[in-house]
Length: 401
Image 1: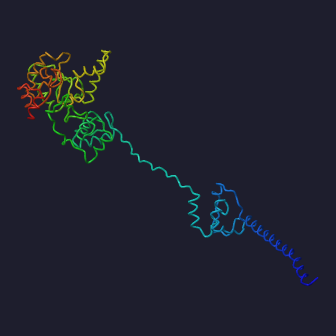
Image 2: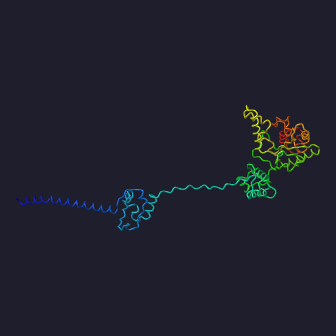
């Protein structure tokens, strides 16, 4: 065999050996890589993701070893998001990240707290002071009313009729609901620098015109009201209802007039009504309607109300709300035709009064004749109206010319 052939045959026979060696090296390399991966997994075990891993005690990034003393290699930064997402390495293993870790923890693992609603401040409710109450609060109320000129006497801490009257007048002058109850709004104004004093009360308009076309506001309260029985002696006149009030000037004129009547031998006078509030007038209307409906079951409420308005003024249209009108009667006797009625119609203008509603002026006044109803208008106006046979509507028109 030529030497060249031998050489080629030798080369061919060595090829399988070389290929075998190369294959073996590849296997060994794969085995080595496998062992390395196994060691890595044992040091960094992969655990399933769960909510408990978020709440586990964190390993400080500054630590150099684990609890069992094994060296801990931080997860490379490039792999950290993957490790956190799948539950191994944890975000605390990010290299050199003490500040970043805290920020990431806040974002990823600490839920944003639900803001608590800001509590609405609640003010302590103010006690409403009213008739029948007593105590230091009532006394303080009285002291303030006295300081403003609405009360006389020494504050005693007892909320009686005088205190109620003072509260009503204060409310009326200061544009409040004049109900005599010292509630939060009334007390707020009373103790403020804006409270109007009694000397700022508007003077009484003795010619104030009130009728169906010119009603008063439900909150209207006349000034300078007094208890009639405290101004006029019971020897002169009987006041049918205790506590009945009227304007002071009008009441004093009434007392002078009735004293003159008694001196002339005409006595047995009675005051059946004087000042009425808007609410009291409405109550009279309601009572009348109820009576009509009870006595006439087939009537509608509208018909009963229409019948009522023939004799009872709608609330707000009654002169009694002015405090200037009086219903003068004789106890137990129909007033029309009595000697008292005749004397009153003949002489009342001499004391500043007029008979407000007469038969001949019904279309102008809007009310049927009431022989007992007199109205204080002042001495001059009363004499002019009587001389000219004018009702108040006509006199006011004359004055406005």
